[in-house]
Image (cartoon, rainbow, N blue to C red):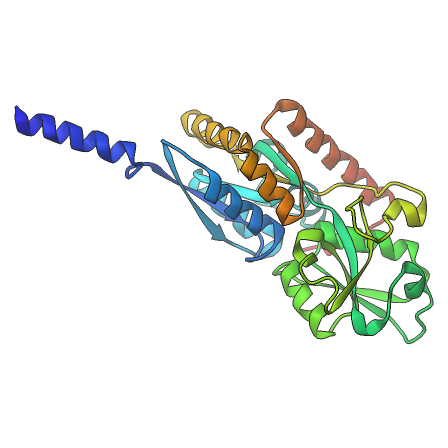
Length: 308
């Protein structure tokens, strides 16, 4: 009888420590160091769960399709994704997708939105958009975080405004790889998510313009073009629609509790993001409507996206 009591107590202790908690993968569809990666690791370091053990894995490449494949296969993965690429641009870029955003996904919550900032290598002596327009030494080389990324879309929107020759070089492994080439002088400028470049501004790169107000001493897109920047770049948490109701309920509870943590919200701001931190229906619907508007914008303005 004593042995049985001790055994039950031991099992209770193991369960209370989460030793037998279900393994859930936070899948990042970009390489280490970018905004999605930083955000995911902030969630993983903040989250407290009685039922799940969360692990971060980077699965970059193929415009997020590798990460999505993992999520759909295991049904116990969550993608921390830039919403436009997963929901919109992939559907325009690839004739055959392994998923359908309307019925393959369950959007758990919206973490934050990412402001974009135009930065150039200091040696180019570009300090304003007008300096770009006056450049007379050939094409300006823009870097971007892969076809269909928010940075690529922002770059294409800018190129439509400029009257100069330019070309865009997509980096399939993400904005941090493009930043490495920018710092080395291999490309001239890039529209980047602010968290990717904020710690490098000043020493080797110059910030010229931001998509939204950042509190920096640079003009916004509205200041330059007297119109609002055409889209926002949300980061969302997405699970497979085939995830069991029990798992999904536990995951949503874990995420909701994390979003309520003021240190987590502060951490998002420290990264350089605009926190949303919401699992509400209204916030999720707002992002999905933004996706629809972005799809229309891309079509109307003939923004080029490489086809598979």
